[in-house]
Length: 241
Length: 282
Image (cartoon, rainbow over all chains, first blue to last red):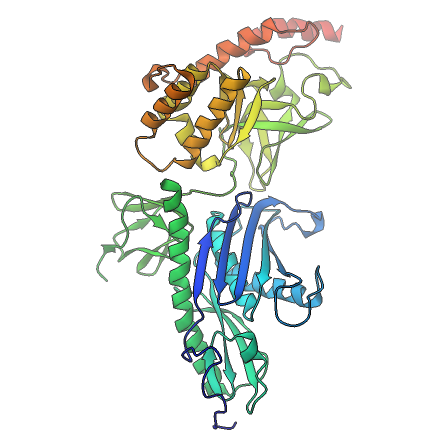
């Protein structure tokens, strides 16, 4: 792979390992059992958790454990370029599944046989990194819903843009078409154990770069985890006032 | 590793958070051990009793437990009983023998006793691993709830609404003169004059929002005095909730009995029940 770096400075002047400004808030949807918002730069994810509740269709019920069902939805005028056609798509179905798989390792739903925990992730505004923002918000919402969890899940996209490893790509960086192109690697990490529950890649990187990229993602996800903790604690201290 | 507490009593813990290190501390409810760490297994309020660290849940769905008294709604009438829903992932079944000591013949119309949409105050008698739930109407204070209105609150705030020995809800009852039944599933039934019902709801919402704070009893007392003008005392109703209800239901049901309808019969009517059963066979 070429060692020359055509990407000299990030489009938004950030450091290579710097995330966009992040905010998190818990308890934004009163009717839901748990809810949270996570915003990173111009990407904003809302997550609402309903349940455990009765599961229909009945053939999906599992008598040994409750199941998790994630619905990912990007709103029509949320991002750059084309309007997203409303409703489900092949992409949203896939993202629902990978988000579900990244959250399931920390969740214990054995206490709730035959039931379902529904997570709805809505993206009113997007600028790349939506699945990661969705995972961060959903993990907070699940904790807020009082479910049994061994850990939180923090997620961030890392990647290689023009030969340079970067953290938290924007849409412009993902679409970089200079020399070296762009590789995008969403990673979900369990902050306390350092385990990885989501690792996808669009593009290509060398083995060394992949290792370095995952380490960068772990470092960045610790910042996200701190924010998650703060938001969750604040949501209940506010109630106290 | 040295045993050390990493969090204080009454603080909020987040899943995965280290509550203590070392092997000295013991994980209680909602807490788990991860080698030398004691970590939070869900979100909750930390309480430390000696060496045991526990988490009190603050939010989420009501999970049915044995002997909980709940307010449930009839959603279906079965061959030999009724199915109830009570704001949980699971539904409960009331069998005929747990519903009434009357003789109910084969093919009788069960909707005469409990019809779809009726609310009852009942007790959970059995739960299986697959969350099949049995409930009963036999017991002090258990009855059909007629009239009034239901408010839903967070089930984890119910202990605070009831208060010590029922003192908090007793205070609201005294001040508003309304009849109140608190179900452990987070449903509260209020029956009184319309304006007083609204005051009672406001008071309950206030307790729900401030359940973490100390000195809540005094604030509710002041709130009730301001709204109703009545001075109430929290200690005046120790343990009286159940007894109140029983005398109320016995008296109340008889007074507005419409002749053909008997919804709840106290168990001591065993003899007359037997006579009736005998009559039925003949």
